[in-house]
Length: 387
Image (cartoon, rainbow, N blue to C red; front, side, top):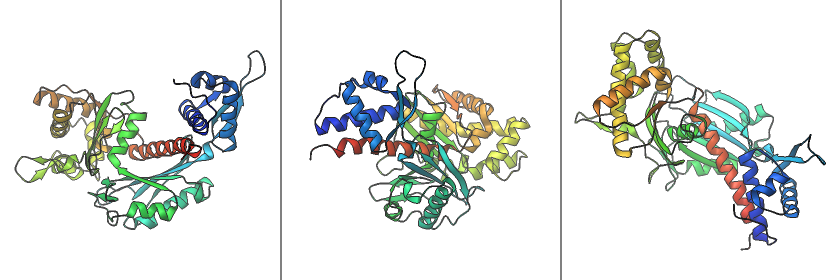
């Protein structure tokens, strides 16, 4: 690592941002460990830690014991230095779940409050403000403690026009809404496609950890695709990359959503004698009852979507995710692999998601934390830098 020691304002800021970045990455470190990682001198390391502690970004969390000499102080980031609220907005016309799932976490990633809200999703300003305030109340925090709000939406966010597009939830497609929310809440607000954020969670918590890149195919009430390129999500010029459901199927006027979207899965299940309220419930029944004919036909449809993605991207890995993929598990994955390999010469590795919790909400928390941590590091770099 490049040695950052120096006494100018710019180098001081670089020293502090580098130290904070290491504490965020490693969790806890002693002064000696920080000196070894940064190459800073003892006095400079002490000065940097004093500045970060006085600013409320770092704190002493314990002392070493058992070694020769005095016990060394152990430093970590101050978890109360920032808080993130994540909201997963759902299309309630296609799912029986509450309109919003939400959680609040501190800078260390500890979830302090989490709840589901049956609120009027068509009024996004009121819905988000109510959710943030309620979560803060549950966590015993003032609303002003929230540093960033991350929205996961069943659509695509176009930053050029500040508009959530391709969304069927009333009220959420108004241009300028995200900026208005930031002004209303007096904090930063981010918005991203829900499947993109599910891929963010899969990269950090699931089977895609360590993968060079991957494509995540989402099968649930809706249909979507997220493309991870070495840890960066490909969003496209207007944020609409991965809208797989719009891909036409033949010349019939149908698209992939008509083939493997939630209503299509329910209809296919009913043809094979499996009736349920949700597509994932129908698939669960088929897995338990060994409904091979239904699962095999569903796998053939999923393989069609998989072939479209793999032929264009040739990804190192494809992850099957969403409620339907979770319900189908390894059985559905194997059937999809058989259908895919039987129909194409491609041999893309296929895995099913390892996440059993709400992947969209987890990904929104992870993305919000990254935004906050990057902002804190950048603020240190610019605070003391000359104009």
